[in-house]
Length: 150
Image 1: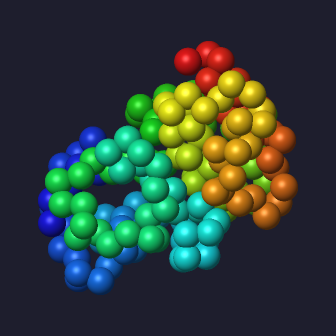
Image 2: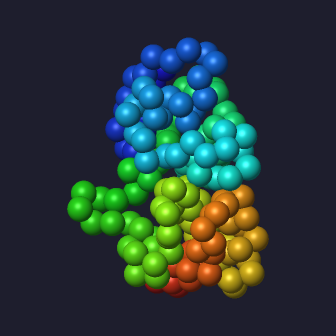
């Protein structure tokens, strides 16, 4: 199949039962997207599919021929971090770091969707991403900061 991953057109051979998550990690070599629950409950596998947030563990790769996928690796421009990546650092919005890639990608989607008018709205629209370490306050602050500066 051929699709655009992080701005680069790529051809990847996959079995028709392969999830988008497994294709990204195992075939495309992009391991920043994490496999958490593998059931769509935790959000660790969040990527942008044609600009919209999805749990990549819940969809088959072959369903997205020709799609544009953005993973955590595709947010930075060279050595310049995406503003939300920098805000996560500035606000100490991660602890163990496992959920961080999904949180950041989902946060980028949340900002693009303009669901950032209040901390309560951010929490609601980020509710599909679980942080077992409990860094929610700092995550919300990082998203609000980035949305304000966008």
